[in-house]
Image (tube, rainbow, N blue to C red):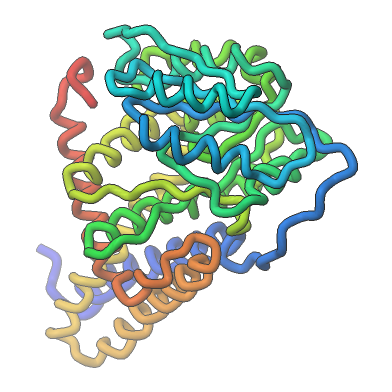
Length: 383
């Protein structure tokens, strides 16, 4: 039996706590800082020749949303040739009539009506494929009907990401602010995901993109046979495609506020959980190296909080270690909250700053719940 001495009790717990603090610090200071410490810049000036672009916007039962976003797209300040391809995905409302009225107003608007299909009802991959095939330019800019550009410079700013060798440009989608704790929880989870994806992309490791603000070469889509390799997976039309092509092409990140899209946030915990399930289902099919990098952060984050809790209990037996515990705990929290606060300049979550510890703990608990659900759910019945 191991004697319960200072060395056998204090050293293991504090060793784990220090290890997890070190790992968390590396992520917050070296990965997330690529966004947090960036400089805000004004919109770029128009280029002499701006590339032609096709904006593919999908929606289902999005009558009101189409009526908002399409005029906003045609109000963009862009001197190059562009078109809008509206994908009406198996709608049962008056979306068809609304789009017909808009088509008469905007001659370059093309409408793609997706026929009803039980097989593809829960996936956007088939509808988006039809929209991309209907496009008449070599550059595809993707968004959703319920999103809105943050400025009239959105399209131009996204197109500036194309440089020699770059065939994919990743943009930021921010969730709209609303009163209530659920909104803060949803924006915390969403923006943490943005920090991961955009931070690693800045290091040359693009893991995924957000289909609400994403652009790539149309030929690239067909070179890799579109979504064929993961068509059997419901979600992931944006994430899995970028994850697949990331090894063969460069990706540029555009994160300035004027280049963003704004999306509605979940209004209930049930909606939050449903989105979390889709993220989990998609992330399970990332490259193993990408899953490892994301997993290390998640493991060290949970490890930090659990080891901090047990180390605090140990300090009850050995009070002289309270200052060391406080130093380690405060250091990690200070680094994380400082980076979180700086990132709010681009991700618009300044109102969540004082809530950060609670949002982090609550999100970890909910994600652990989702992981357990997935573990005990048969493969053929997963989300």
